[in-house]
Image (cartoon, rainbow, N blue to C red; front, top):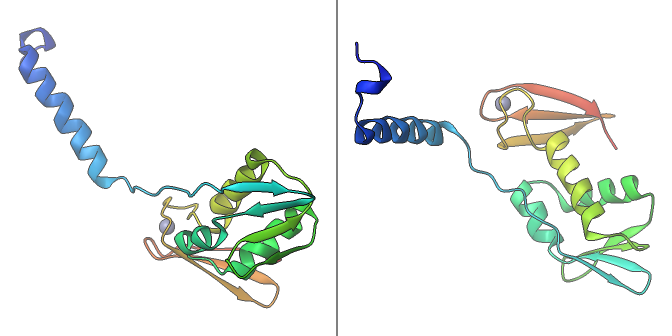
Length: 141
Ligand SMILES: [Zn+2]
């Protein structure tokens, strides 16, 4: 067996790349969308709300209710598919909430996949992972 000193620089590089490539293949690439937030007057508008719901594969109504519940303000979806919330909120806090939503209601806590389905049964949400089959339930809102 060779010790590390006997490998040439090229050989070491080769080994390093092989390891990196192997790792990349098994990791899932999913980018959590960032909310474009605009504050006008007394309202906070999430401009790309519809796109976010689509990327996350969640109903707009559900995502709307989540923001209303977390911020404790009324909100509505306008004709352009933007979410309008009463009150002024920073882009940072809106994106933190969005991130929390993804971690809890989209990402599978067992395998980390984002290919999941959320269904409502009575007073509970069931998050079912399409990658590993795991099911998690939460209190619905
Ligand atoms: Zn899973």
